[in-house]
Image (cartoon, rainbow, N blue to C red; front, side, top):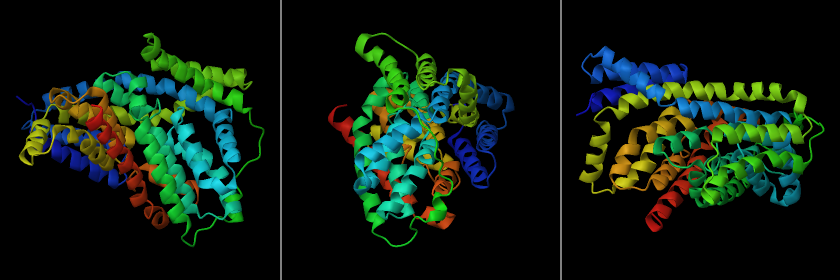
Length: 420
C-alpha cells in the first residue's frame, strides 16, 4: 500500500534535522534526508525515491510562484519606508507608557500585511530600542513583545507559510487567515503579559550604543503607507464576500505596485521588486527542499502509523494537526518549512478522518509557531541580532516564545471543538 516504510521516513527526517543543526544548508539537508530516507524506506529503490522526491518538489511550484510574487509587496513596504512608518505611527499613538503593547501591535500589523516575521522584527527593532530606552524596558522584554506580535501576525498574513498551508488543504487563503484571527489575538495578549513580566527583571537595559544604527530619514505619510496592504486585503476578500476570486499571485504584486506609486517611488518599482525577490529566494528554495522530504513522508507508512498510535492512546484524530505543526516546525526551526511538511504530509489523513479542512490548516499553522525559533534556524539569530543579544541571552526567550505559540495553538484547537 505504501511505497516507503515508516522507519525510512523517520531516518530521513532525523538525518535532515542533524544536518540542519550542524549548519548545513537547510534545503540541501532536507534533500539529503529525503534521498537517504527514501532509499532505506524503499529497500534500495533509487528510481522510485528520486521520482517521489521530484513529485514532492513539483507539488510546491504553485506555492513558490505565489511566494515569489509576494516579494514585490514586501520589497515595496520595506524599501519605501511604509512598514517603518506604520510601526512608527502605532508606537507614537500608544505612547511610552504602553511601549510593549505598541511594539507588539506594530510588529503584528507589519507581519500581517505581508512582511516576513524576521524582517518585521528587524524593522520595528530600532523604534522599539529607542522607546525602550526612554521608558526603561530591558532588551529581552522588547524582543519578546516583537516576536510575540510577529507570531500573532504570522498566522493571519498572506505569507509563505499561509500560502503553503492553503495550497495543501486546497482552501481559500482569506478564509484560512480569518480562521486564525482569534488565536492571533490570544497570542498577542499573552505576548504582552509575558513581556511585562520580563520587563521587571534587571539587566540588559538599552544603551546609547544600541541606538547608533538607527537612521533618521523622511518617511511617507501613514495613508500612503497603508494603501498597498489595504488593496491586497480588499482583493483577497473579494472571494468570500462577492465570490470573485483574485489569486494571491495577482493581489500581492498589485499591492506592492500601489504602495510604490502612492509613496511617490514609481521609478524605483523595479529595484524594489528585485529587493523583494532577494528576500523570498531563500524561502522558495527551502520549500523545494521541503517538498522532497514531504513527498517521501507522504508516500510512506508514517501517516497510517501515526493515526494508529493516536487510536492506541485513544486520542482524537484532530490532535494530529497541531502536533504535526509543532514537531515539524521544531525539527526544521522554520514556520514555513514546518507548516509545509505537516500540511503536505497529513492533509489527506486529517480530511479522511473528517477534520474540517480550514480548521486543520489553522491548527497546523498555529502549531508551527510554537518551537519554530530554535537555535538551528536563522530566525533565532536574526532576531537576537536585531536588539544586540548574545546567544545565551537569546536562548532564555525560547520558553516564553513557545508559550505564545502554544496559546494560539490551544485557541485554534478550542475553536475547532466549539465551531468545527
